[in-house]
Length: 271
Ligand SMILES: [Ca+2]
Ligand SMILES: [Ca+2]
Image (tube, rainbow, N blue to C red; front, side):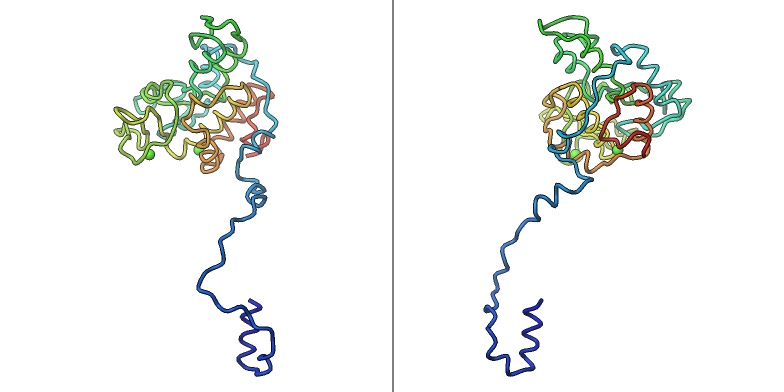
């Protein structure tokens, strides 16, 4: 800017002829330089692995011991007592739907974001009820706590829950893998030669990412079977920030599982 101003002054004043000459104009733009890394990392709204590592993660929950009727009743009768949002299709359901565990004539089930069988195998069991020990180093307490932690349980239509099964989440190219389109606008499931992945709709991605990150940092569960690329968890959490429904859900879970608030969902009681 100063050089331009000086040049303009020089046009009007011959005395400038003796001033140090500016470098000759060049058609080559200056080399592009990236913004300082510190600037990116200081953005408090963006998650990074470094920030996740530094977070104050809770201890495993001790309210529920295994994925049984008690935790299912807590989910439908407490967390979703006033209704909620179906995970994959984002349909709202009412308190009555929650009680009936059915909406739009489709069964509502509880989906484990981090598949229960994969968590159980990690803790040394062959079944998701953590009963059939498969490894000498089996940890029944962790297995029961992880498979019944409410943070990992989401209301989902039964057929979509079954379709996810224990396949990893990921991103599928294009939109040709949409399934259940008669009632669900954007549930993508790789079939045939496509990767064996479930690609959740944008509004569900952050919810799932925050749940899977919680399961990793609280229970030590590895990412590799839950998501095809852990970097998706960062971008999904960043691109689908916490909303009022997710905060309400977290407040209920914190009430039922004291001391286990997911630090990715803000301060206790703050929306
Ligand atoms: Ca896609
Ligand atoms: Ca969301």
